[in-house]
Image (cartoon, rainbow, N blue to C red; front, top):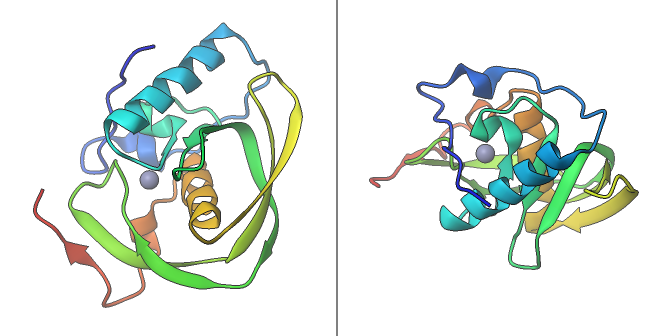
Length: 155
Ligand code: ZN
């Protein structure tokens, strides 16, 4: 495994591009997911999407403290309710803000073995799924901050 450089919203256009579907799960993708997990843990994040390490592929990792989730081609197939809470992003250091998200989502994806998986998340996990899947479409949480809740923190 290896650490990868995390893209920054101020300098890296890659964060605004749409990622491509992964059509073959090969060693490269498996290594990418491993590296992303290591990079996320090292940065104390709860999620990381491939564009954040400069790769425009639909792949992400999440760990909200309940174990590592690696997803390929994830899609939200169901959502319910609403929650509003603070978010931040490893690519947007120093800014936090509240974002409205569904309270429960169901996600369909492939795991690293190429198997179809369906995962359900509520609360923070639902938020993490939405935030990371947004990255695959070039959408950042700062696009969605509820007005008046943005904070600049010194890091
Ligand atoms: Zn992010």
